[in-house]
Image (tube, rainbow, N blue to C red; front, side, top):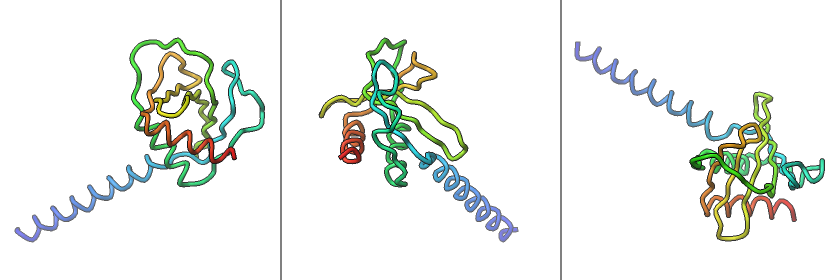
Length: 139
């Protein structure tokens, strides 16, 4: 009886750890490619991306930043974004995101093209990380 209980606990722990690892892996890196364009009046300024990001580490970093952003309350009325991101997923999906990252020492913001009434606040630290990705990739 005692042996069955120990085996049951061991199996439960293994299954729990496996589920946690599965969800961690599948939620931390979900992008295949991100194309970043300069924006003008909520449209791409040019049809050629300013940057096309395929690097796994940068994609993971951007994915984490987006996931950690906080939804802003209320309906937003905003100026034209600085950048437009086309986020390509592994499942062949594509999301268009408007991005504002401003100058140094400023928070950022993004919103999805298909839901411009909701915005997401990007912390000052994460906005700085995005600026660094855009600027270094652009040079």
